[in-house]
Image 1 (cartoon, rainbow, N blue to C red):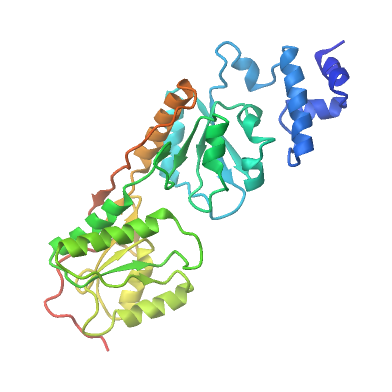
Image 2 (tube, rainbow, N blue to C red):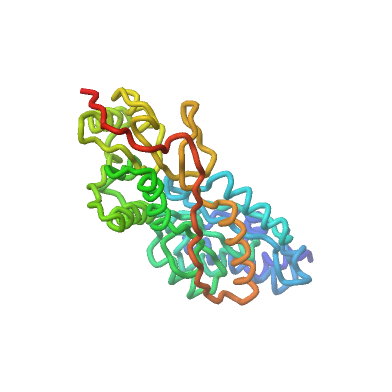
Length: 346
């Protein structure tokens, strides 16, 4: 009798179902399906049957693979190319490879599937790439089931690689203050007011406010236009940039290209009439002009996440506090001294 036949005899499942489960092709959406699949895998392990990556890892009890956890829902994960390449390079250097999986909230928090989801994916640990709208109690569940995991760019103090966004907002504003700007405004064109937003939105704004107060200036109310469409944003920005009391310096969460377009619509030249500092990956160039920015250290974040996860796997899930990574200034062509007199374009 073959091993597959013996598994079928012990579990009462069909040969087709057993083969599908053991090769990882089973859709375990319902708790009953997940329980049956785990019973098949357990019997297979008892009989010494190790499929695919499991067999290659039998000597050291490791799969030598890391699972990158993404959401099935659009807009909840952000994976810049520089970060992905850094993760892959760091894992290759550690003798690991990357497996990418997409999960619904139900699958990621199910007591029936979460305890075994790493073994089902033949992975030793997980890099979790959710940026907002986190599944309910996910951190408690990861800890409860001792799943080695590291979050990326999330608002957690333990087991999380994130960026020092507040300091980044402060440093961006200081760039303008050091040039002599005093009328500086913070703009956010991305986030909608009625949605849960990424933690960086509040921290970058707080950093702007910190720098203004440190300079003895009153922070201006933030211009938050994420609720508007692109053309409406341009129109609103252009109107804001007209007149004697307009800002001479802008710190923007991102989407600097829209501010450049709005400035042109308002008849302003950057940086002669208006200076802009944004946040990005250090390589952005819009409309033939490089934008001064605070660059997020994606490459360092990838290396750090892999290093921490390898350490956590070795320590059987012990939590680790991680210091936020500093952003760095990337000079561009959009930050200069303020105009001697604000030019009205009305």
